[in-house]
Image (tube, rainbow, N blue to C red; front, side, top):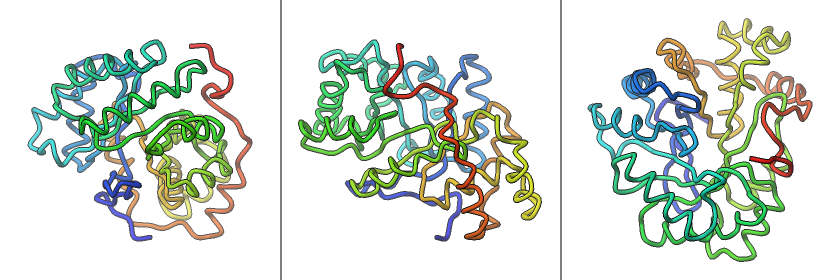
Length: 276
């Protein structure tokens, strides 16, 4: 697979989604958020991943409007939070997100977590937004296979993306394989395990071999596994470093050595056991 900053993943409906994006979780300081997003756009990022929970949708919209990049060239993902789930509530939450973003459509809208009582109805609302051309692609986040099966029993359109926690300590191979069979693209959140594995000896050894940072090596691992990846950083130099991953390719052996680091170890909650 030949990869570069412009590489995209074609979703089930033919939409092209950039493989590398900027995650903006916890960027709640408006000036810092705008600075980070502006830097990312200047460096060539064309995918910004936000959510209503992050409380920075307005800053995302402001930064994009202030940039020299046309809106049509930027892929925007946002998400409906758990307390806003349900059919009617999701439609209202989307209107609020759209207003904060200052846009007339969103590229991808996700159910943030599979709230047991509401996630199927929430996805039905997302389908409606898709039918009304207010979003270009449908999706979910943190959904196991059984959640996706429950949705499929009621849905007319399968989710096109499932955003899940994924990194070398949590490879989620079975879920990734299931999604691939279903034509559902995977986006990796917490792709660096919140920095907890940057000193891991195997990763450091492999990174040294390619004269790359551990973070760059991990991002490259995601990309070579056909995963969409959204590393989060507020630091412009780190944002630039995170995209400097196209001048090397991990060998088959190194990919397998990184795969072998899996411990099914989460930095976040299990989608079958959360209370928020």
